[in-house]
Length: 130
Image (tube, rainbow, N blue to C red; front, side, top):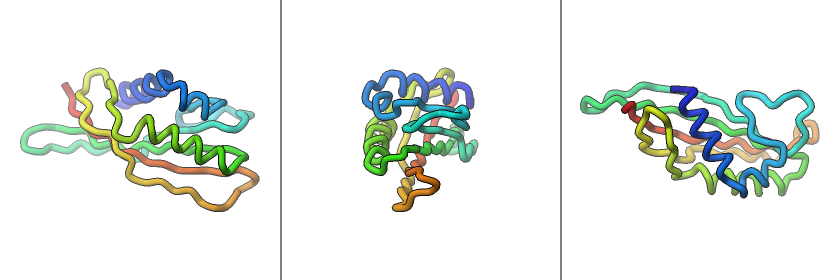
């Protein structure tokens, strides 16, 4: 299930010239390689819950994207492109029927940590096994 969802996220990203342009140094899973230059994003899975509602099993998963740049306005542009692509989107997840993908949380601290600006965005994905 995790691999199928990661693949769906990658396919959505690879099909978006806008997001790929905003994340000049890529979208990475779990951690960016050492030495990756800004701007870039990392995504990972926070939670995954199997739910049974009226006899139907659903996977309820929260993913988090961390957007990094050394330019504050660039992080906002990156977030706009990310949110345009993933909030309320349709994902093609092999072996599953996609039900929803909704942004739940965004945190954009107005501080710079070690000369790095960051925005954190979380999305809830609900899907049903075929």
